[in-house]
Length: 340
Image 1 (cartoon, rainbow, N blue to C red):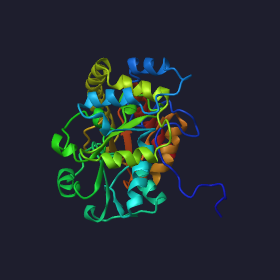
Image 2 (image 1 turned 180 degrees about the vertical axis):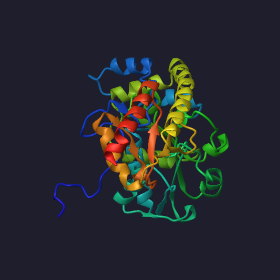
Image 3 (image 1 turned 90 degrees about the vertical axis):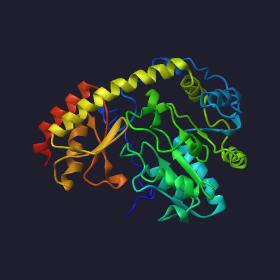
Image 4 (image 1 turned 30 degrees about the horizontal axis):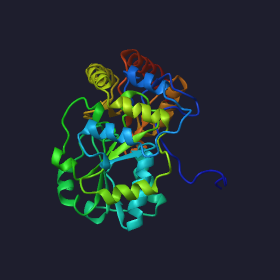
């Protein structure tokens, strides 16, 4: 029997767990070159003794100028997950269903369940459609995204999760600039800056979605973003921060090539990816994977089991520095026989 205090579902995420912070954390997709020094300094110097401006006037203007659009289209959020639940609440007020990609972030579905929305089998059956590119967990282009936007943007809310666009290492976005103006764009700079503990995000509304922006503001608690989140988002728009990010991508590309080579040498099959992470299938029986991952975690190395994404037998692997890669390679060779 389930304990009365036990939740009816389990949230599965990468990052720290009951064992604490992993020594080598391949389970979360934060920028391994980080934290960004300028952004970290801005966060550390934030004045937490004062409320932020409740309307976030200056921050909205900075973000709007950064993206070259009207500040009225910027929606502040406590985090990407907070926005996911809030825009799902807006959709629930109108009724209908939600459509998800085949493999996607679990909070999309969880928000739909909480708001009692059904999951649609096809985009044409839904009023809220989710997209992510580069996708999670695959780090790849979302098949058919452009066609979906052309067909459904006028009749449904399409939210494009762009969490990993700043960490794109290859390829190009599927949507044109004109198509982007017809969808909601969800931006979470904390991953690119290596500051995932700072919870702050923002969304860009489609052109002509003023009523929906107002409704989302009404659904928001006061001050969804605290002083430290404001400081991070302001630093995100700085040219020096963007220069640092651009330089980090070159490093990540080299690290990724090296890491994939090591994984393949370990007998792993690595799936194509355009981002700073990828999915791989270790050459072990699928049933053995959880116990092997448990052994690695006990030794300070955490990988993300991709079963929660519907990819049984796979792991999602973030690109880390060579020292971490070597630790993974050595630990895999050591534990693989003991844990099977």
